[in-house]
Amino acid sequence: MSNEILLARHGQTADNAGGRILGRRDPPLTPLGEEQAARLADAVRDAGVRAVWASPLLRARRTAEVAGAALGLEPVVLPDLVESSRGRWEGRTVAAIARESPELFAAFVAGDPAFAFPGGESLHEQVARTARALGVVAAGPLPALVVAHAGTIRAALALYGRPIPPEASVPHGAVAARLDAGLLPVE
Image: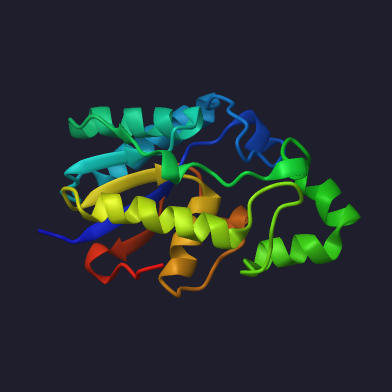
């Protein structure tokens, strides 16, 4: 049996489609987001998934519900999988932020460990929270599907010492990374 943790981003929301930073905002999936959730279920159907975990935010919970139903598994909500608190950036467009704060935005895109959202959480804080969450997942049945957010996925990749992609390149409703639970670093 595989030791894998499959990290997937939730399906699309209207805010995602509109180029807005969500953070802890809690919009529902769009019809396309629902389709992406169904495609995620198809993509992991043969992976032997034994547990499904989700962020408490609606977009991740719903994606996990759709995938879990197709797999015959009930998703478990894990609060530490929640997206980063993005402070004053929440609800604003990516384009406006990039224009107004180019250096800060570049640090965010690059996943600079020293980056912190203005009035929100630092990437270091999110990595620590994600490490706790992955510890819980790794202690449960494996392989496991974790449905969360681009920020959570980037934090997990940072934890594992892997390259951190820009958030815009983390696909909605798809497995974005596969991690070996047995190699989980201690934060």
